Image (cartoon, rainbow, N blue to C red; front, side):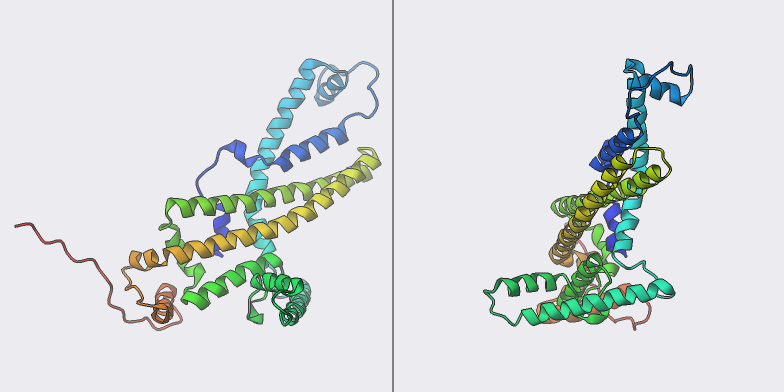
Length: 321
């Protein structure tokens, strides 16, 4: 999906901006887990990695500095990898990349069925008075779910994107995915800044979610292999799981904000979208639906008959006498 993929796009950032707090936390946990829990005794080896760790355990300044530099380098390099994974992670959590055949498809279908049942329960609550807290909360949650059951995704993030596209299509008859490549070229600076901020919020939480998952999958195997003490590893794994759950909920909130920003940007720039394609502007809300359907069919290029439209071109400049 173009709008989801656009989360990872935008102007290049400084490499320091890619190092999230999760990278430092993961590195700190790794150092704490791998450090000797008892003061080292005896003479350290003359060379090798164990020599640096042993010297650092004795408080050798140069060894401590070397380990610090190595930790920063490791955190920086790993952050680049995690940053590359953040966009695909959001795409995966949106449900669009989940299998539609095979054993996992049954799990996806059950997940969708569960979300449909939850949506029906929310719909039943909206019959209560508007002043009721339960009804207000139900309407807020239903706003993030598509009205058409066929568009329901297996995840909250997928529902948020689907509901956004459904609202845009219902209001303007524009397919947000088809319009997005052209629309990105038309955003003014305030809209571009808002989209970049919302995108940074989502990707930052996705990166930290990856770091939290790495903490869990790293700490427990090290303990089982008797590389570190069991209780520190268990504490690190529990902390990573708790932080990961909080980040997953925050990621959903960030996607909601991003979807609202995209919807507002399209609402504000739809005239510029038509003008960029030399498409005649609609005269009113009723005409906008017809115009949007024709423009979407024109962008789709296949599967629909091409509309016959007279392009709205600016008048030619007359030479001065």
